[in-house]
Image 1 (cartoon, rainbow, N blue to C red):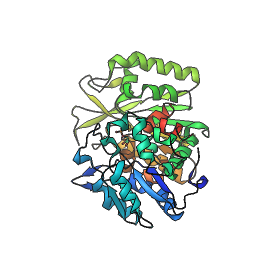
Image 2: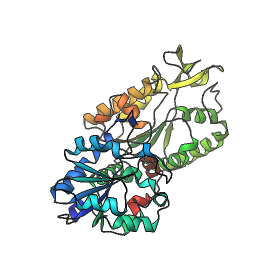
Image 3: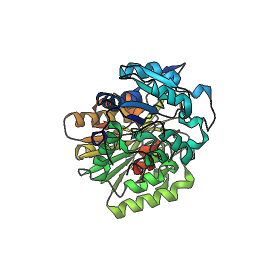
Image 4: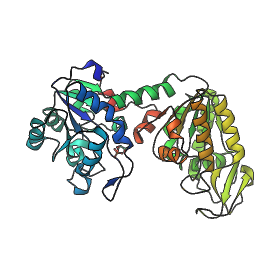
Length: 393
Ligand code: 3PG
């Protein structure tokens, strides 16, 4: 695929697909990371004399014009991040979009209304893509985090105009390629989170790509149960123990070591500050719940990190939202951040709760790369082709 460096942008209308699906509470953006990360692309287009016209989705309005899912309230946050005026158009196609674009002043940006207000967006509708294509001369996709969706603004549109990847898309793809494409070895993956069932494809792919797979969080309980251990009242998918054993077999065949907790933190209530104790995984009381990975296991994870060159991280190691069950996640992430700072580790993280967990551990600033993507990061880790990337050619 091409990048902004390959395009002649002067005087061109650049339809720029961004992912500004940011968390908003009481009309205010509570985490502007996704907005900040598209700034280099917008500034680059402007500095080369192009006219950035932003296409984006917000929430899941399912083809309806849902006022609470308008992109208009994001204008102040965008203007602050871009340092320029951002003009809103009430539709992502047709006359209102056309006139906003025709009236664009130098250095200005146009934001088009939520693409998902049209049912054709999620259907990857060709006619909708053609209408959007009329608004631009060049298409730039900077929305890696929406690239797992084959939608009109991420897929069909890319085939209708000269297309390129934006700076954030480039950065995401190159970081991910470094971590899993041709990683420096040994490579370790840390995968946590609640359920094995949501990460089956991911685990199956990873065991063929890395040297060590550290499993934490609720999903580790399913693996422990598959080994015949009693996990008490812990979150556990008992119907997935056969699958967990198959993944363990696949790992053994591929020469990938799976690291499960040796000790765990257990409590009787899932509550902040609940009385808790550390036990070996074979000694989990039958009336208790596992809520975090234990300190002995964390020491083991640190040893693995010490001898690794590349780390890829997805998901927390315990119930990180409530104290003190965030300790394993904080300690392991903090250690990975230190090794990265010291130039000893390439560390890449992304997907769902991961960024929140790393932020809480004050670790994300020191990771080599933290992806803005949730679902797209997971699909990429599963080894799937992302339609939004494939369409860039
Ligand atoms: C995300 O928040 O991960 C992306 O914006 C994609 O959103 P979606 O899951 O609603 O397609």
